[in-house]
Each structure stands twice: as C-alpha cells, then as structure tokens.
Image (cartoon, rainbow, N blue to C red; front, side, top):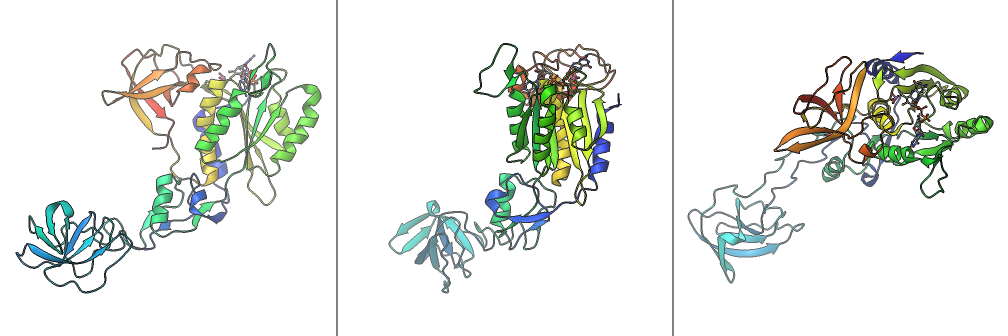
Length: 409
Ligand SMILES: Nc1nc2c(c(=O)[nH]1)N[C@H]1C(S)=C(S)[C@@H](COP(=O)(O)OP(=O)(O)OC[C@H]3O[C@@H](n4cnc5c(N)ncnc54)[C@H](O)[C@@H]3O)O[C@H]1N2
Ligand code: MOO
C-alpha cells in the first residue's frame, strides 16, 4: 500500500495545484467575506480623505495669543463649511467633520467656555493640534490588500472604506462532501442499535465554512455492496461540477470501505492510500483529470472523528487554500507549556489533539482526555495539534511542546 509522509503528500499537492487556473470575478462587498482577493486591492483616495476633526469641538482660525473667538457657523459630520474663516473666528464642528480650510487647529468643546456666540479658550492650541492630516493612514493608490489575501470582515471594511465597490475575488471552489456508512444517521433521524449520528457531516460543513466555503454539496453513501452502483451514479452527478471532492469514512481496509472503489469509478487516479501519521493514517488521495479544466483533487479522509478532524486541517485545508488561490495559508506554530503528559510512543509522526489556551499570559497546551483516532468528545474544544515527530520522546507535564494553532492569525 502506497504510504506517504504528511510532508510528502503536502509537497505532492502543492506541485499538482501549482497548475491551477483561477478565474476572477467581481462581487459586491457584502458577499466578499471569506473570499480570496484575486488582485491587489488599492485605495481610491487617501485616508483620511480630508483634514478631519477627531473631536466634537471648535475649529479655529488662530489669532496669536488671543483666547476669545467668535463662532461663525456650526457643521455636523458630512457637512462642510467653505466660507473664509478669519483670524479670531471659530466654527463649531463634530467628530469626523472636515476642518474648514482656513482653520489651523481644533479644540475639544470641554476645553472652552461658551457664552452666546463667543468661546473662551483655557489653553492656546498650536497649529495642526487635533487635526487628523490627509493621508495619515494611507495615500491614494496604495495597496491595501494584496492578491491572495483571505478577506476577513476587517479586510472587506477597509476595501469599502477606501472606495472599492466591486471586490475582485477568485471564483469560489465548489466542494462535494461525501460521508459513508450504513451505521450513520443524520441528526433528527431515528437511531437504531449499532448506529451512530453522522457527526462528521456537521463537523466538516462548519470547518468548510470557516475556510470561506459558504455551502458544500453533500451526499451520504450507504457503503452497502448492493447499492454501490446506484450510489456511484448519484455521486457522479453531484461531482460533475465539483472542484474538490472531500469524503470521510470508508477508506481503510474493511470489506465495506468502498470509497476508493467509488473514486476509481469517477475516474480518479490514486496518488496514495495511507499517510504515515497518527491519527488519520487511513487517508486516500486521488485526482480526476478534466478536459479543458482544472483537475479535481479527491481527498478521502478517515471516518474516525478525531482522525477526520486532524486530516481535515493537515491535508484538506492546505489543498483547499491553494485551490482557492490563498497565499500564506499555513497554520502558526506556537511553543507551549504542556499541561498533561504525552507518553505514547511515536513510531510515526503524531498530531495530538487538544486546546491551546493561556495561563498568566503564557501559551499552554492541554491534550484531549482521550487521544485515539476514534475519540469524539475532545472535538468540542479542540483548537490545536501538538507536533510529535516520528521517534520524538515522550513528554511530561510542564515540558515545552510545539503546537499547531488551527486558526488564522
Ligand atoms: N484491519 C484494520 N482495520 C483498521 C485499520 C487498519 O489498518 N487495519 N485502520 C484503522 C484506522 S487507523 C482507522 S482511522 C479506521 C479508518 O476507517 P475508515 O476511514 O475506513 O472509516 P470507517 O471504517 O468508515 O469508520 C471508522 C469509524 O468512524 C465512524 N464514522 C465514520 N464516518 C463517520 C461520520 N460521518 N460521523 C461519525 N463517525 C463516523 C465509523 O462509525 C467507525 O466507527 O480504520 C481502522 N481499522
Ligand atoms: O487513520 Mo487512523 O486515524 O491512523 O488512526
């Protein structure tokens, strides 16, 4: 059986996906969240675009050491006052207002005494005091978000703030998610003895959303031999417009582990059948060539929940990010103090599931209570994987351990 290390599999996918053709489309900002910038997104104007007041107060046309000013106008944010303001005159203005051109400083309203149309300053400001200059944060034409950036809500807000109305993004990747096994029932269905809920379907759908995939096509196959032919046809139809096929379960050596067979019928060329890591070693990789289009990666991940979670992050996320055109898609590695013991032998690379948290400001890794492939309950809080390379020694409480944080930072 063809087993690769995780590094070998990752390099194999990187090489294959380097040939991916990405299509650009322009979308309204409210649909850009989670998409990947398909071009550098630039500022259409400087920021701020005008001399801006950070306070509710008064803009002054300075008049030497004079403390008494005449208030000649009042403006709110969005309004502007274009009449000349003479030395000794002031304009009452609100936070965010454009400071009138002939004013040199702003004073907060708390720093003046107002009487009728006049104000009395408690201190005399210097020129440019309390005025945010044009272009303090960026100049017109500056690159705000480079091509390949994952668009967070903050990134989208910046693009909008800087005058971008149509956001260039890569056409989204269509994912087909397949689960397998007669023992599985969906939430809300009646569970018979010997059956369990199809929790991976819900796990993967949300993990895909975290990656910006709003909705994935979903299909469950029973793994019953007598249904294989019809199920292959059903998956074939759904797979016709998929850019990535992701499955969980049915990839090991059991009699009913029929996913590799199913993938073969879809025209997949097998790349590997096993990854030298724990958990998640039961893992299929394949590729379906498409005439005139990108080849479709097929990732058949283990059905065991913990193994599936690990393999999703370690194998599927890098593939998905590259397919979507994201640059810099790696998870960060954080050196943590171990809160617990990692005593298992490591005959192959091991990725121990657990939670990264902080104690007195220092990162701490707490392994899940049960760390087998089939473990389930640790998933409720797992956000990290401790890296235990092949042949690395056991670690005890308090030791330093490198940890992959399964989050974008
Ligand atoms: N004789 C051998 N048996 C097994 C081997 C082996 O090398 N020789 N490998 C073991 C390893 S390691 C793993 S991991 C599992 C992987 O099995 P599959 O990926 O084929 O998955 P299934 O057999 O379909 O299911 C395994 C386990 O997970 C449960 N499952 C499956 N799908 C879901 C789902 N969508 N939601 C929740 N739980 C799911 C399933 O009921 C099984 O309990 O094989 C070992 N066996
Ligand atoms: O593939 Mo299994 O998850 O190694 O444990």
